[in-house]
Structure formats: structure tokens, C-alpha cells
Image 1 (cartoon, rainbow, N blue to C red):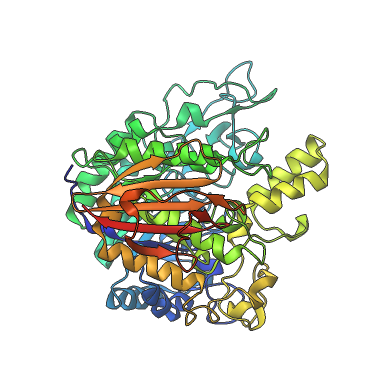
Image 2 (tube, rainbow, N blue to C red):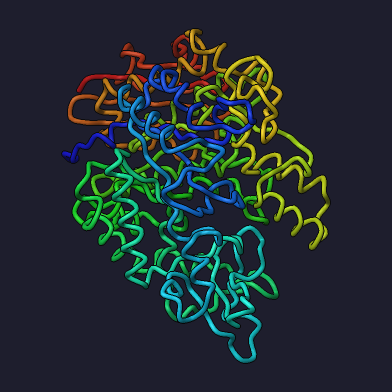
Length: 558
């Protein structure tokens, strides 16, 4: 099958969480000038696009995902002039900038909501979702908010009405049923694109359309239901996104990715269709749930590799030729991949980090690297009072204080899965605070920065950084890595992830050992004495012995 080629399919994206990336002025908070100072590092790594987590004005209830002004820079990050300099330098180095677009909700400090609260006759009232009390009911429906925040409905005493917030009460949902909201959002997007940004990552974009009847959901506990099955992928979202494309995106050569939880490949084909024109790709979460337990993500259960292979392969197979995949192991909302899917012990951290990189970057889709992943950065263990993440703190309160879970048990889960694992300061050097800041960091820097840092890796040909650099370089030289068809081998093997990628001219054989066990597996005859494209040990063993966390890719011509 001849696939339509596009630059964003061939790109590698690097996610920056600005608050934790690099602090240029010693106030303990990462900033735009800090990012600018590290662009040569990213150019050396070889990435093509930076996904910039929110930098907008925000009260930081949810670390910038509660936006008070879409067209102003948060003071702690710098100024618009700082942004312009960063953008210009990135472009001069061949790096594109993808902004985070958060338009399911705003901050309650946004001017629109401040106006909306003034009463039912205010012209901004219908920018948000307001409901009158329902006789005989405590709330308009039984949806429970994310972050353990109780009901999604918050009472407004002056107007005697409720407003909707799927997340924290300080993050009211926009009313996408109001065409004026579209005009505001599309105008804002166009102004950023005119400034020169190259695309958008769209936060929880598949939640923007709500069923106008606001039906009850199935109860999770005695009071609240999970809103996701009711809200996610409501059909009208496709109308909104096609309008967004036709009124804004079609006029620019953009990269767009939508965060779309609870989405099947069938629905993803609609979002990412080459003909319907909504989004380039989506973030789906099937593989992020393979190690869930009785409390959902809050557990310390290690995954069964067969489940991971089934989840990844489903998307590789079903989107081939009909949509496009985004490939990721971690981001600002997920723990560090080497601690979760690999082995962060001194013995195996580097080798397993390289294995994970191999497994992901050889699949079909656009790979995403989260800051520090290219160094093999790890999870951090803290006391509960040292965490900053609203989800972590609310979950601890719910399970321990309300439901009586053993605190030590909950802390094991937090150490394994907290979003704060990804938000520690970037480890640039062995200097104080990992070189992230000369001041007091806003959040703890992982103490292992003395041995895991960029300065010790960039010139080391055997480092995790150098390995990622090679993976990214190989992608540019081997079209089969981008467009070749994926085929899973050995689906029931509990230790080895083995697959091929094939196009008209070339076939790759990819093998990754996800365990510290030694295994034996004969290399297929077709790949004997063929080129070793990349390997995290010196070379594959001729006798078929597979070493702990070993990964290699063999290449043959067809």
C-alpha cells in the first residue's frame, strides 16, 4: 500500500514541560529563555518539533492547563518578546514549535468566565455551561469530576445556578454549542499561527462536545458516576473539528495531535482520516492502562507484556493506511518509562532505556520523546507532603483519609504512578539541582542527577542520549521505519516483543527483551548475516542467546 507522505509523519517530537526544563534567571522555575538556551542540545539530538506544554497566563491550579489568557505569557516564563526569540532561534535550527491548545475549559480567572458569572443576561453567559437546580436532586446530574473533586457541578450563589467543570472547580468547561466560542478559539489559533507557530497539541479535545441532555452515568460509588463514557467522542466533536480545519488549519502547514482518551481505532480513523481532515494524529491511552489494577492507574502492578503487545499492535494494524499513530511511552501526565516498563536499577537502567527507545521508534507513527527520556531519567520517591500535583494529593486524600487505605500502600502507588514523576527538574549536569536552576527549584530535583545528566551523556557514544540520537537519525535514512507495514511475531511470548516492518524494498526485524531474563531465540534464516541497524549490546549473539533487556534491529533488502 502506498501511503500519503507528510513531513509530520517523518518527524520526531520532543515534549518540553517548561516549568521543569531550564531556569535562566534563578527563580527556581523553568522559563522561555531557558528553553532558548538549550535549543542547540535538541538540534544535536535531531528532533524536528518541540511540543510546548502551556506557557500561557494561568493561576496554576493544574500547572498551566487552567488558562486565564490564551494570548499572554505566564510571568514566570517570561515575555512575548522572549517567546518570539525562542521561536526565531528554533526555526533557524530547523525545529518547529507545537503549542498546547487547551479549549475544553479555561481558568475561572479568564475574562470570559469573569463576565459569564455576572448573570444570565451577560453576553458571555453562554460561553460556559450553566444549569438550574433540578427539583429533588442535589446536582443536575451524577457526574463526578476528575481529580477527586466531587461533583462536576459548582454552585454559584448570586445567580442560583450551577456551572460545569469536568476537572477542578477552578476550570469551568467552555460551551462548544455556542458558535461564539468557536469564533473566539479559531481567532486565537489563527493569531498564533500568523505569529509563526507550527501546530497544536489539543488537550482532552474529544471532550469538547457534551450530550445536551446531560444524562446520568453509571455510578462508580454511592454518589458519583464516571463522566468519560457519556462525554467522550460525542458525535458533534467531529463537526467542530472539521470546522476548525476548514476555518483555520487548512490555510497552514501544521502538525496537530489530539489527546483523545477512551477512543477506539475505529473512531481514531475518523479523527485522523486523510480525507475528512480533522487532526493529523491522536494520543490514545490503551497501552497506558496495561498495568492498571483494582484502583485503576493507582497500583504498583507490573504489566503483562502480552497485554502491551496486544494494545500496541491493535493500533499499528488498524490504523495502517487509514489514519496515523502517535507513539509515546511517557509525557507530563505519566511516570518515567524506564521505571515503569523497563528497569531503573543501576545494572539495567541504561540498557532497558535503550530497549524501550528501540521498541517504540521502530513502530509506525510519529514518535514523541518526553524531556529526560533521552537520558534515562527515572521516577522519584517523596513523602506525600512533598508532592505538588493536584491529582496525586486529591487521590491520596480520597483513598487514605476517606476510604481508609493503608498510607504505605498508597505511597507505593504514588511512587510508581504519580504525574509528578515526570515533573522533576531536567537533569542537565552534576552541579547543584542538576543544573536546572541556580536558585531553589519549585519542585524537587531527583537526587540521582549526579549520575544521570545530559553533560555526562552528550559526548559519550555509549550513552542513552547517543542511542536516541542514532534512532532519530536512522528514521531520516530509512523510510521503512516511517511507512513500512507492521507485523507482530510471537504474540504469546511473555518476555520478548518481536515484530517486522516491511515496505517494497526493505524489511526490518525488531527484537526487544522486556525482562532481566536470558532467553534463546534463533534469528530467522532470512535475517542471518544481514545488517545490524542498531543494537543496545555490541551485536546479537550468533547462538541465539538473548540477553537481559537486549534490543536489536536487523535489516534486509527485498
